Length: 243
Image (cartoon, rainbow, N blue to C red; front, side):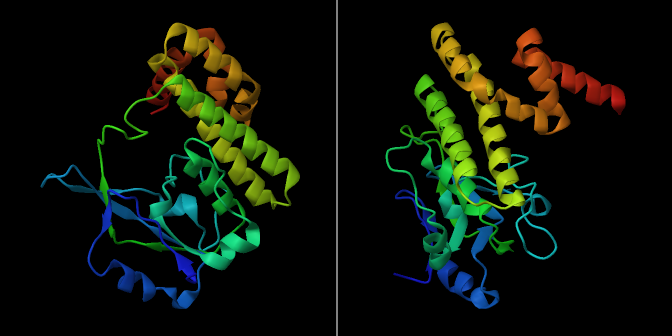
């Protein structure tokens, strides 16, 4: 019912005064507020702060979303990194897909693809618990890989059917390339049979790598010849030689 929405996972918490500090920043009327930092903790005194996004990748000098969003790892997909105008979600029908594993990956891609006005907060107010036994990030399986491929399919379908701007379409493609790389990087964690299934399922979307960074283009042309890991080593060597 509020004008802005915040998300907090059940085993995490906000630092004292976080909501009041966010409220004080709403005078610019952004569509999305991004936390530039958060604190990871393990249920004891061992905590540390970590930057989670590259501001120059996320927004331009006018506060508009950059077409380079999701070109690199940042921004991360967790909804609790963002405070979002409720009307922005309603107007653009940006709701999570029921039953989808890793649904925040797909949701945040659409969140940024509708060209929101974004304000970045340099402080970190969110306490994020790590290394939970039931955490989705604890281990990867064929189920995770197939869920990521389903996200690519949904985003490409969304891109084709909805009236996104050129920047919005590029953002969706960036996210899909990110997910393709994620699936390919996870293959060594799978069994031989599961790896074959995931590789076949992601293959129709590997063409997206061609229009990404130079490194992604190299992966597109050489992964099937040298293997994913060896292509990565080749890229590292080429970077070293260039330096």
